[in-house]
Length: 232
Image 1 (cartoon, rainbow, N blue to C red):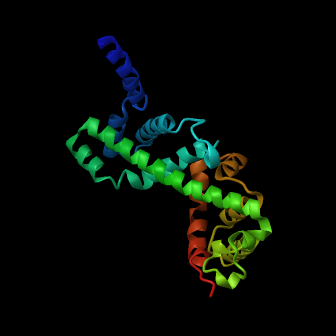
Image 2: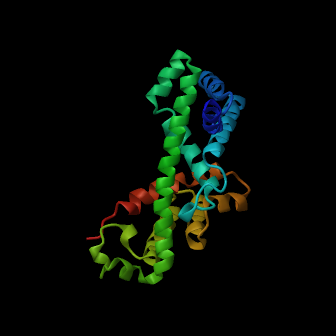
Image 3: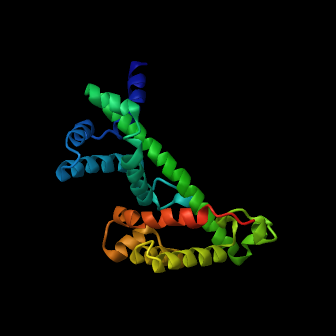
């Protein structure tokens, strides 16, 4: 009986340790002491990347997110660093107390939260993308809406009309110098050719986070200019 009990418990211990990243808490504490140091920031980023890869390994997803593990990891990293770590009061308390075990626990919790948020968002976007391609210009028929005037937001309009309005908005932003022309044109290319941020990063020879930052003003502008627009 004892032999069976030990062998049954052993896989669980291995599975739990699989997600541990040695030195994560130390890297976090070093980062908190000197957040401007490039070497320290790079070391902490490597630890987070290792944790992300253990939580979202290649081949992890099926369905609409199949093959998008790298996209999920990169988006989750940006959300984690930009919001979830600083917004975790338990992590802040553990850092002040110097509790390395709790620091590791809270960073892992924040990371899981960022992954969950990103996968939820990406699933919605992927389903919308698949609906657009499946319905094409007959998107009205799919949603059984007879006239554009009955819709309240841009994203309820047919894809072709969305594209025209987004392009017109970005062209105007370029002419009025409200956006950097290069960023606006990259956004238009992504929409026109169905490219991802990773595709753009490879074509430009820059990192995926760099493309994300480059497009941030474009997203903000479109949100102000179009996404909140109502269609009476």
